Amino acid sequence: MGKTSPLAASAARIVVCPSCGGDSVYAPTNAYRPFCSERCKQVDLGAWASEDFRLPTEAPPMDASYGDPKTEH
Image (cartoon, rainbow, N blue to C red; front, side):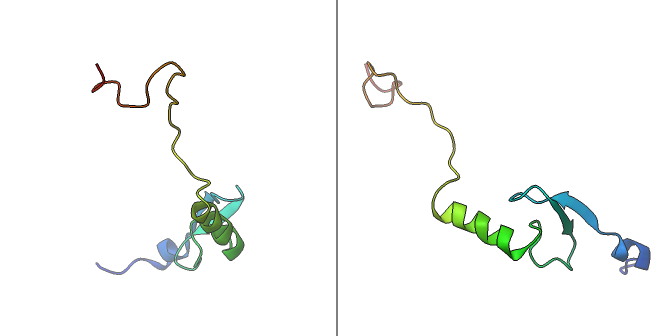
């Protein structure tokens, strides 16, 4: 009951590589999953390290003060 069938173990899921957009095998045999290669994994790591991934923020209006508008009176 704890073992998987050979058919289930051989069926690999194909996902989109988050770095290049190509096909990537999402299985334990792919050491770089969800990326397709070491290069794509390193490119993504470099983008995180250089802070290229950021959450969008709203810039305050030019005539507003730079504080929290909820606490400003």
